[in-house]
Length: 436
Ligand SMILES: *Cc1c(COP(=O)(O)O)cnc(C)c1O
Image 1: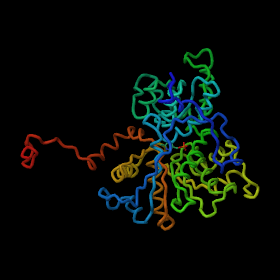
Image 2 (image 1 turned 30 degrees about the horizontal axis):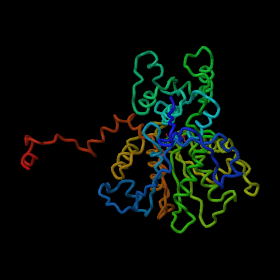
Image 3 (image 1 turned 45 degrees about the horizontal axis):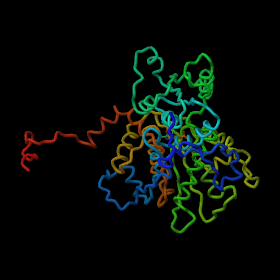
Image 4 (image 1 turned 30 degrees about the vertical axis):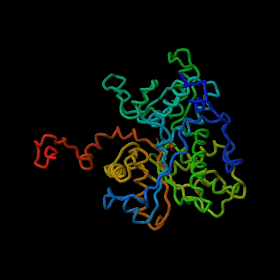
């Protein structure tokens, strides 16, 4: 059932697409413009929070923490709160892509969506919730080592983290093993399931499924991050006196759409293709921290998505390939640590300390890993490059992934958050509340 309302308040406008016109700086350069508009299902703009320097007392600072060491370099650390794009079921970076993807699905008369991701996929969770908002049926392929055991009834699929929300909104879930995912490829699996659903043998109740690739990272979904760069440009106004110039922008990279949107957006918004020259302002350096694969893979993937967006570079740039241009405007870093969705103790310590010092929850798979690896890069490889600079960390959400790490995290909680019995009756000590 789709949300609807006949009066103007509450409005049903978010659930109907409205026309989208690209930012001026993208005109003529990104030529595959979304034709079917955009849904306004995200809560935008998201705020930018200044972590330091800050006027707030630094009471929680753990003397030698990574954050403290960054602060000692006179870095200004800003956080773009895309973890706040929506409520828990929809929030994070994926909803920006879904605004375009689901508008397209509705315009095409589709009745359902097929997408794919890891077991704790934030993308699948957000897609499922967004589908329900606009009246589409969600079908999710989830990759898990547990696929066979769950199928054999040896294990319950459970409700940990994102899975609870996938299931609460009634997604149809299909499990595959990492091996199958690797051999067939995610696009082929989505295609095959979509074909099956629309075939007569399927009893899914859906007949015309819209296919969304892993992470929503195709040429259409990525407009969400072109739009996001437009948003941050109007928030920071770098070419004005009261504005703030961003020197470095950093974020986690998984399927590459976010990286593509931010890289192209930042380059074009700062005049890289000459459509709007803001020569007084230098282009921020864009850093994508890969949480899987490797940097060469990401340069290639980002270039492919850029091509899908119809990137058309002016001749004077003399870039022989899209990838050459991407490499000029993006630095991809290795940040996968032990591997996708595996955490080291140092990473989990960092996520815990960051929450303690700032009140902001990162996630273990993406944002926490990315910021941890970027901070160690600054401190261990190149501190002087960053001294006194404005660094914006783009928080992409994902906190539900923390529930998958509860076992590891709870060992640490005793140290940061003691729990005691409220001593009302004075049984435990003389200085109890009983005497007050
Ligand atoms: C998907 C995701 C990312 C990565 O974004 P891509 O566009 O897939 O590269 C980063 N952070 C979180 C929390 C995510 O869920």
